[in-house]
Length: 405
Image (spheres, helix red, strand yellow):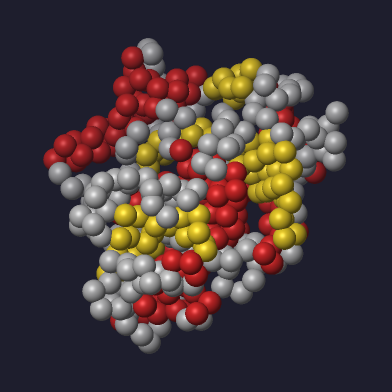
């Protein structure tokens, strides 16, 4: 019997062969907390008797969810985090650097074959570079900071195989939303996911992050982009055992939207034609990268947003913002009537500006749309690709991008 990717990478870290459902202890290559989870993780570390970080050079702290500080309470939490990072010699990325997951990848803190814990559910994004990466609670992260290790049950694996190339104006976000709709939001609970086949191989590195980022929206423990692997010893075996293998033809995908208030409530964008949109948000760890901004700029260049429709764009990192500025994308967006925010999580979790009003409809490129996600439980949040978001900002209603591109 062969081994899946997750069995191979965890077996390597555990020092021997492991199979699904084994309980193991593994050494960690990277541990990450953001400003939302760091205070509790640090307190847990201290309450467990932690004096010094086990691996300070691999302990990453990113201030990204509430920057600049909206009030004195959060300012004091940030001060607490900064003091701890300096005292312990941890790696600190302060405000303006960008969303934690984008920064971690840009700065090369995670590599193929690594085992990574993050006190953020979208830590699974790092599967885009061939890592086993998963989100945990702050208490578990506090223990990891103290020991440099973690325990876990080896997940079983679900495999998606994609053949062919996506049609024009259909994007990775449409692909992963469709898969989530098929599996449902809890259909992959505690499973590892393998994204395999020439269809996934045809996607960009940025697309790979989008796909792996939303693995957790099926309930998955992790997701890995198999085409990213260069180490043959980590490639899944032909006779590996899976809970299920699901096959898809890329040509069958269309632009889709996740409707309120569930990420698996998926409908083709064409079926929602005419649905009024008050606010469009392009950003987050799912779709705030350069390619996402380029797609929106290409659609909006030389045009203006629809009357009474607002659009906010937040680059995923300072590096993304600088490059988008150099290429003229930011100027194109501003000329179209778009507002920009500084790199970070911005509207995604509703902790800063841009909160929608009661009854308003938001179309977002982020990863979650449950009731109240963006700061108002009387608003309605839809999720889409950057192309669908920009096309809808142009028309004022949910629009299939194929109609305007």
